[in-house]
Length: 330
Image 1 (cartoon, rainbow, N blue to C red):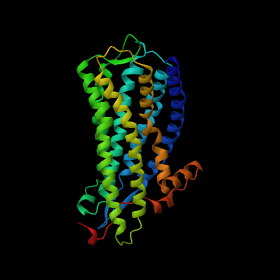
Image 2 (image 1 turned 45 degrees about the vertical axis):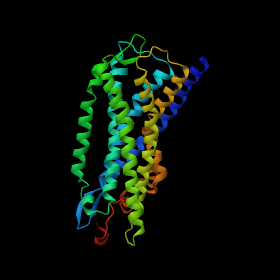
Image 3 (image 1 turned 120 degrees about the vertical axis):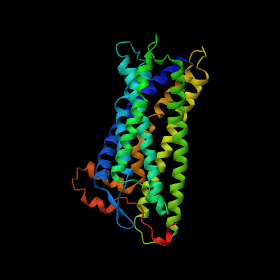
Image 4 (image 1 turned 135 degrees about the horizontal axis):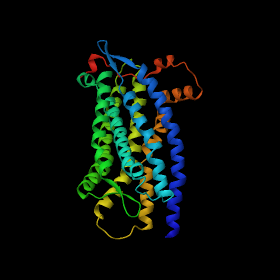
């Protein structure tokens, strides 16, 4: 089984470094694109009421959180599982306490913002005018984002308090009550059950609404563009689900066998390495999912790579909320 352990360590190093490079480049491009989109994008829905397409703001914050995940927690994961680094009391704050605080806070912020972007698409694509007007204004969206960051930041503070280092150089929580809360809340619900259910439900509802709209005889030119963004978020939800399931399974396993004195086998170590790498699927792959699913996103990416400074005519191709005639409203 020693050979399998070596494979696990090498897998962490090689794939981890590749994920770091691609994730770093992708999220920097994400931030550049969504920054421009969130600055410029103001739209009109019915009766000339000004509204903001909130998805770009949510995805901008999600990309920033993803970039932090790539820069800090991912390299330390490579250090732990790849190079078998053992934490000491001198670096327990950087490698355990603050690391897990940043990792779980940014992870949940990223997932929550993508959830809010998906929910916003559901509201905007609705045929019901009351649902469409539930989409908040730009200032309202900024307040929601601030609230998300503030609440989740406070919620994760006990991680700094209770994480410590074991005699074997591993990051561990000794306080059993909070350990159970951590496993159920952070690992199983926040990064497992809730995202899977939410994305499955609202992605389906959004596509169902857009499918109905495309069967109606309208002269709206924005429906196809709205489908692109909805397709982008739908594919993003698939990558999130893929990253959630293995990590949640591993968390449930450790929860069941928490009191087991059985030594970790090579197969468990291999599964731990795979689930840990898949945990970063969402931060690493988000840019590439957006790129393959949306022609407007590809266009903006080419402009940034080619250092084109003129973004003004991008407004002609922006993704707008759907405006529906009165006879289609319910």
